[in-house]
Image 1: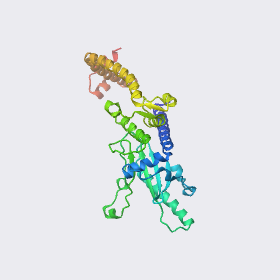
Image 2: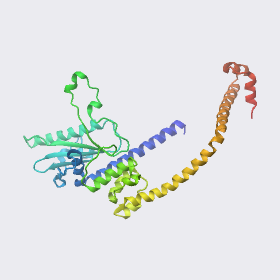
Image 3: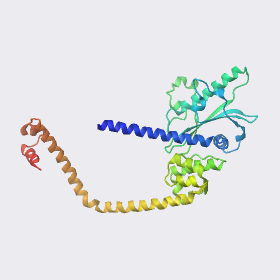
Length: 329
């Protein structure tokens, strides 16, 4: 297999693995958010600063008329619920995103307006004259890299100043684990999921003063493990126990890692100790490598029929230097 073909094959395999992992992350979060209490907690944290404005008991499954042959909305978005508490009638959507997607703001707009289109069709069918319920979509970004894609349409579109006042600048509602924005979650499981992941990403979980999570449900930590792939969460232990003491889990991991770090430190110390002694050897090696390359090039030209004198003329070197190099073992 040629080197290019091999690299292309490895790239495709890697791409498939990444896509599979992202799919698993989205699937795991979708299952987590099927719990209506967790679902509304995200909206309460984002829109209402943690006030329990939305109640889980007022969430309902989406009816089939929101889907049609052109787009099954439930298959395109992760979790969608109708909400009706007598005062507020609305549709709420959470779209999980495990990687930065430059087109996300457009996708969110499409999902939102497709939902309006479906409700409009239903309204016409029922000959209703009432206004449509509002659609609220929240993108939940679970990746480690900071979100650097567009959050509103004007960041993606070149808007001519003459049309700026007429441009419909769609703004995406984004809640991300990375960053410094604080969210007031009421559900302990949601709080633990969000802030454990954040503290893993920013490394603050490894500071003694920061770890105040205590006992955490194994079901929550399985989601954390899927999203972060952190080493110190043992899947076997998560299967065996209903709850895990975070301090103990982290402590065991630190004990293992400290031994690795100690060994690595000793290795680096040895390397640094001999570094000065081999600097000269490295320089000689570079010089030797350059010399070997020249020798190989000269020999190839001789084999192709070039004379020593013509090679010397081409590279502006003496014939004697070429002959000496070619004679070296």
